[in-house]
Length: 516
Image (cartoon, one colour):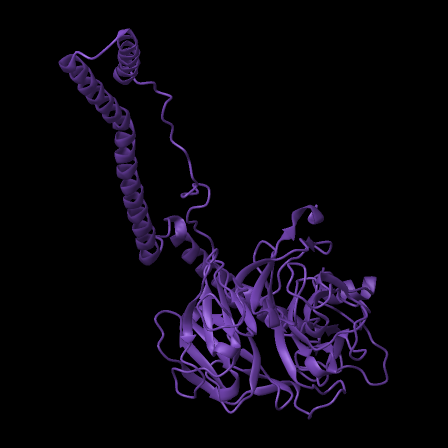
């Protein structure tokens, strides 16, 4: 059936049309065809919203069909060709395979050395009885010879010597036919065969992004000290007013050890750290840091990015054997930073009271939040501290001296108060100098409520939060905090907290029963 006849008979849109919003329109100003400019435009394209006469609508459809073939079908076929090349297994990285080979070789060598040592120990233990028996026999022989030569013995000597000989004979029989159960191999868990090296997919910058946390999750109330905790000091097992932390994929913790002007790495389970940046005292040269406050790891360039606070600069420092840093941005009072999934860096400048985004390679950034002077209006910040950027590029800011957390949607001219905002205080609706923040994929905010010595959970849209860690007064007990600043989660949901004025990092284990 022809299209015009279909329209006249049924007065409804033809099913093949994208949209005929007006058929036989009776408007005083009839629509004109966007091609021929005639007033008989009966058809509207739902995509481009243009009007067409029937003839040019059909031509428009043909053009769309050709464009679909070129832009979609042809590309699909090219994609299929490339996918078909994946029928052969992909060879893993030679570097990673080499690391596994090295681990295997070193582990086998360690096991071999241990086995040699155990064989020697077992031989020594077995021969210990032999040597003792020989010594007993020598002593007995000497005594027998002496008594015989002196002819100085009686009945009780004969009985005593006979008993000794019987004991030696029993021991000799046991030695000749040793019991298989006399010696056992005791496992001392030096090698945990259930926790050897593993191969895992490394999620790009995962510590910076939202993770899934059960809304009912609870954590054990007592934390474990996993770094520092030995008083303020410069020793490698000490920290001095640390500021923030970053958990790497292997569960190593990188800590901005602010008053020691260094970045230290504590491997999982270590009792002391290792200096990976700075550590030469305060200074302005490239090998120095001066009160670093925050850091992230750039996996793409295998480097640390550090807020070198009192040097008014952002520094890139090689992760491996880095002796000095490279200044990538200067003239900023950078106190907090993060990175989005495109590699753009976000900086909290607490002197200019603003958040600035720097695209890769940029020296001049774009102000995303604040920048209107110090104040408490919704378009202002007052000493912003920590940042979090979600997958939609919305920026969460701990607005430290306004005692609130703000969310700035990308492109917005002002922020939204998402936690606190009711002045300084300790009620569940208030915050006191908030610092570190993490936002999960349900937009629930976890914030270090620093001067209230607690960690708060603030669900999306809630008018008040709840205490998940601390809140037991200022102190150094396992269930207490003293001005917490940075916080982060590992992939198992355990919570790590910079307990700044206790000069330590606390780990609070997730209570798995709370997530059932």
